[in-house]
Image (cartoon, rainbow, N blue to C red):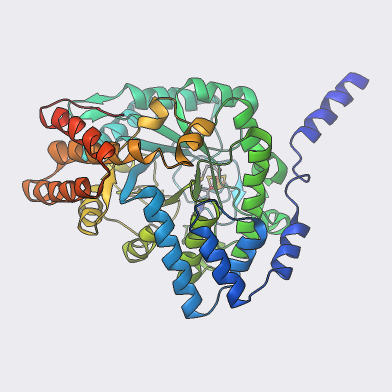
Length: 476
Ligand code: SAM
Ligand code: SF4
């Protein structure tokens, strides 16, 4: 009897997060941070050293309100983004395999309380059909997404593993999916190990809000009510050997300043415990969702101006962490945000399972802001001076977690990312683009080669020769 009690108490303490997630520290640092112009400019200057910022510095930037200082913040963010990420922008698409969910989240159309939603958990053939569609569009990198509810009739958690295997199995004449990232509910360490063995890239999990009372007020029933279980999930993923993890906040639930400082605590905790923080940060902002009155009037809506500030501040705070912007945002906002720090975007997305082969239906998770196809987004990126990248090299060469950061921090990763961006873009242009789009894209590639240092240019040119002569999947 005593053993069982002990085992239970160990389990309980295993995933409590109070030692690193300390709301009082966040409130205190926010309250005491200066809003002095001189101090703000000092921090912006320091950000240009590309070493990141501490909590006090982030809190100070959160107080920026004047148009002049906001522009200075954006200017610094553009500088940091350009120094580290150059012109490249990585593209991916979400693949929703199931909208079945046992949780009641007030803001989501998949909430178990939404009785009018048509529920679907795609079978393996349907998953392969959607995968084929995405491959035919030119995608190489997917984010597999599901509600929290893996039906026993479909094999429970094994369903997720089978889905990943099915995606990797699909090979079309024009290629295959080379990296599957996942956005799933929190798992046990053993399940995370199985996910790693299945060959996932990044494991993404959004805390939604780090504010406990707000969290309790919008997660009404189901496993997701357990705040600590969710906040400790990335620890378990890392314990299981998944060293590329993605964090996120659903902006609109609670004050954004509190959220990004808490996110800093989360990153600091992973860095202290595992030597590496998160690989990416996603910045989903609340969108209207079917059946959710809350999503239409969230408690702490974030304006477009604040949204841009959030991206810029995160860019300065953690310069080497990717920032992901989804099609929740409109094309216009996306355009404004790219240069402020975004390194990855989705394109041509559907959030209803089966959406790529059957079209967009009302079974989606929320309303999308950007409905353009991958082709349109790629063309626009190139016209704006970006190099659309379909690169998946790091993960396939084992450059993940600490290994990735060891290359990124001294600026060496550029010697890999820049060549891989132009070569994967060239591959896309040859296999999927119209003649006109190809000509414009190749002009962008030539311009990019001119901007590169000698080492990166030589390596790009070598790989471009191979791609242009018909070889595929060339990377360094
Ligand atoms: N069901 C899993 C979970 O909740 O962790 C997997 C992810 S869920 C399908 C993907 C994410 O969509 C959620 O983490 C949440 O941040 C976001 N989301 C839900 N409803 C949203 C809405 N109305 N607007 C924008 N994003 C939303
Ligand atoms: Fe389910 Fe995730 Fe939507 Fe919540 S956010 S209802 S857990 S799919």
